Length: 142
Image 1 (tube, one colour):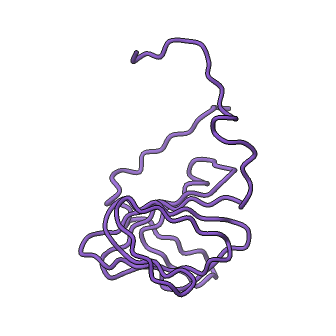
Image 2 (cartoon, rainbow, N blue to C red):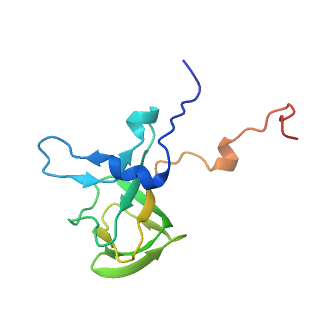
């Protein structure tokens, strides 16, 4: 078994080719690519997302066990969180606890591209510093 997986999905502007439409769920989300199955991730879900101008999540939702982190890479938009409008743009990071009722849309003139990461709330067993191990050896670029 390999200790890593890589995939090349191309430029983020090409996210429009991906559609999340689970059979029987009545949901169709264009520009959404989940990475767990693609990369064999077992501890969290990550999705790459693109909303064209004037589009967005067409329903409110919340989670049962997962907190979500949204990292906005390009564009500008607005999230509605628990009935409050929150502006988002390139560089905005939003952390939502499971019970936060949420939806969002692109209010700008360019694509809104963002990453969503979700994992079980309180699931971290150690910080990156506590879990990481520095190993001996010379890196090839130094």
